[in-house]
Image: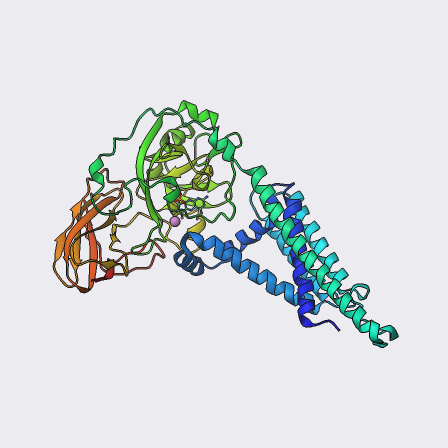
Length: 516
Ligand SMILES: Nc1nc2c(c(=O)[nH]1)N[C@H]1C(S)=C(S)[C@@H](COP(=O)(O)O)O[C@H]1N2
Ligand SMILES: [Mo]
């Protein structure tokens, strides 16, 4: 007799071999053949907008880890079922592996840049998975049978049977471990062979023709632990749908400009040399940033004016949208006038370094004043001039607004929620932003008191956030601090709470803390 547990283990071993072999064979084909990424991306694409929004808000930058864990749990559950339902006569579990393999192939084929050969690793993996499950379920292996020998037990037979049982468990476990190990090896080899970090390290940023104004020291309020005015590259928030970071070398990169243009243009990385190199300080913000959230950062960007590139193609007057596409198929729809303005960049540098790979190496868009989902395409390879009434970008299809100007907002960084504050003088602070308009004032309210003016760090430009501080004599007990910003158009942040969907959160940030 085989226990349910042993049957389940067969299924899990078969699944481990199927996935592991697919990963290992996939290493010879490249990232576009990676069935794990393809399935994950298809899951992301088919996840309803509100659920994605929930995942981003709940897990933030760990949303991809959450997806990986969720997919693993589903695969394991299906594998257990496959192991239990498989019998020598009725290969139902094998049929499940075949079906999963077919779905995997479909997922791979749906990825941009994948061809028919790229399903080979998935096919080989599924075939190995079926072979393992058939073998582990076979009478020859299990010894389960209706022959007279099985029943006919003498003393040694009992001993024999435990030995055989142990050997079977070891073989099942061995296959499981081998499957997992080949999977890990496949992932590591694929990463090493496709990584463009060498290409990035060898890239010396082009000489800047037009530098950004220097950043004065007094943008940073003294004696309060606020975020740095310029966010370090490794602290810059990251949001994208890419499960494995696209690896695009400078050699392979191309940007095609087409659609409603006078002449289609394709530039490669070397062609960029003929354009002026400009530097700009721009604060990026994610539309998914909840009130008080961390999905906002500021950097010094080096790159080329998108306007200069568009001018070579000649934008037709009836085009009102640029649909930009990344190498992994993600899209953003940006108003033409935002990209023909002087300040929109095709950025290649971030804080004096080549773009980090996860921030779009070798080139991305940076457009002041617009949320990232409608403007900041990383690994950008295609600009199509079109119209808002003809084309819809990735997040807009999922229920987000077609246009996404950044809203005036402010955040308290100090004190943190739940932080213990000591009685006496304290300096609090945070950030405020209203890209394109600029922050004119920040006000703070302690408990139910009057609004009071916060002290502002120097304004760098309307396209960058502004840091603020506020001095307060703390008295023991629980207190609440609330903040609101006013921009240079005269607009003061509304207290009305709005969700990030469809076009960005609103409301005042407030923090409750305890003074001892
Ligand atoms: N290729 C690609 N580019 C993308 C995205 C994406 O999912 N894929 N996400 C956008 C969103 S929603 C935001 S907020 C910004 C974030 O840029 P960052 O990760 O460099 O901070 O990138 C934008 N560019
Ligand atoms: Mo975003």
